[in-house]
Image (cartoon, rainbow, N blue to C red; front, side, top):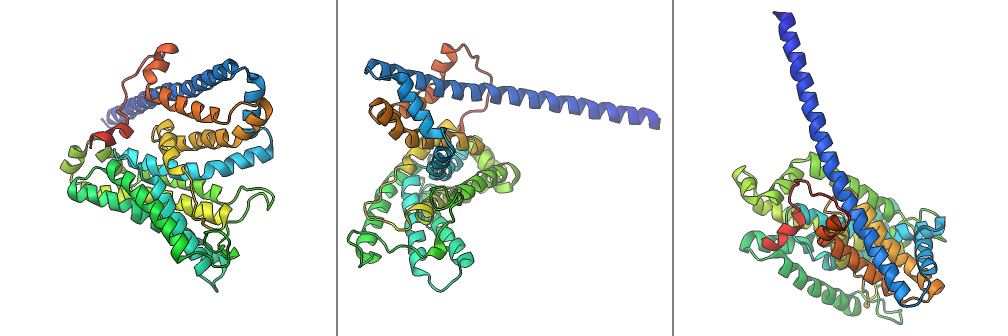
Length: 383
């Protein structure tokens, strides 16, 4: 009887293992198909861009050769691309976290600004402390500034049902104007000939990874760490489970006893903190001050990065690298071929179009659609 029971148990374990293997294979196959659609969308956008270069009379080989050489044609170019991709990674994560709960966080730009202002203020205002204290406090202040700015639309949505899209857009304008006023009137460096804050102290500098001749700084390592932490938190923590559950079905989350309102505020605050960290990293790693005419655009490009990554934290890395690489390689492309640098904007727009209208890619390359979970990033529009 014991032998028979043991045999049954073993059979049960084998059957369970087989089910797990089948489930893993099915999920891996679906992920591979979706990944191939994304890659083909980027390839198709590049092909359309090549056609436009050819139509303009420029040399396609020289144009794209310059673009890719500027992206990763040498160790120095690769380092520059990584530096350019750093704010895209953090702001892309800020938008992707919101997408996971069905929230459309268009406010990453304003959160970026607030984080930059807080980090700059602490960077030049906190004196007499060692670097191992000053540096993390300045970075944490950037996170806090962005988190506060992100929590505001989260609270408005949770308490009054105000749509986060409208609130975050409006708060972007408020943040830009507020930072501009603060830099010009409150924290302006009186010794400077232009409107900017004082330079932050060296104790708040993010160290350069490859030495002073390269722009790549330790903020890139912070961005990589943020990707790992966010991916782990979404999958292995109670808060991450609540985000994903509510993103799939808010009513089911509420029925299961989850505090949807609190989760909404916390998610928007976490997203804002990531964007604020991006602003702080930009000040602490590259600029070392905050000018009044500060114009980033990272928060808006972050929407495209998260969209391209399909709200997957790990997918944000290659998407941000592509965005940073296109920006970094555009100058060399223009020098070598004479083509307008605006072609990069066209390619980026085409990537977004083909990702959004993926049936075009599926039909063009004859890729069948598998049953899959709904894209959480589209739910933010429906409230």
